[in-house]
Image 1 (tube, rainbow, N blue to C red):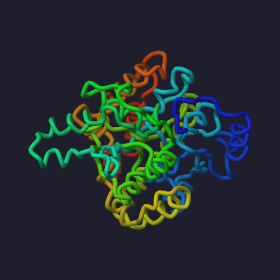
Image 2: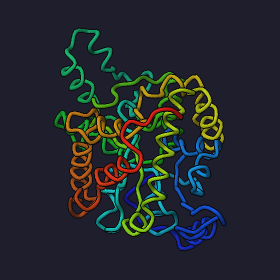
Image 3: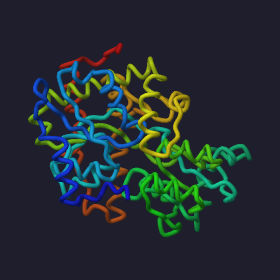
Length: 367
């Protein structure tokens, strides 16, 4: 199950992960090593592009990529199984009470339109587009789209940003989890169940959205119509970040470079990522599909200015505080966390941004 809340991992798993990755801050003989956790999604897999291009080595760091299921990422960071990982604010908020060293260190990828609530073909669920086409205003269409879910079965991944968006959408029209039946499954398992006949609606990631659409399912609502967007970025611990700040900034520098490269060479990035993604999952994402979604369903900041404009600015399309507040409200309301998590101690993006701009500047271009 893809639960970012779950902190317990088996001793055998933790030892195996630690054994294959070495110790944090270690060296490969020439460059310091960062063990970076990634999951099989088209956005969190961006580092494999940099790895294939040799950009980490050129930057003077050895990044060992550890592919982990989404629900295994935060436990791996908390246990020291990896030094850092790509995840989102929901993941940090869900574990910070039990693992106070966990921090959200930097951000570059708002999931603005990536999330989509999919409706089963033949289930009688109308999409927002259909409701607007029949004369409803956008606000009314949104309200009607979510009200029709009462009594229905929804497949999603609870205690993650996915479940949060389902609950937030229901709450916005006066409904709760008690008004629907939730089937809580890992995204890939949930998609398989949905395509096999389980549930009336489904919410997963972009690969799952692509597959569901290809199977004839419809998009009931997506993006900000569901909830403030999740924000993907770099999570780690304060201890590791404090001891390895320069190397972590180098990692961020390569990530911004990778995004700029993908902006200019989207098909090449798409080929690298979809080859790996389709091998590891049942997504069946094509290069053309990757090109169609790049900088559309979700946004990627190619430099520090992009982070400031999209995430750090109160007027940004994915202002971090709205998402952080939503994470706290969702996870406390459903009992996943005992108390809210203070951003002052666990959201360090502004501090990291300041250090990054001092070292590399705000308006980097080229790849």
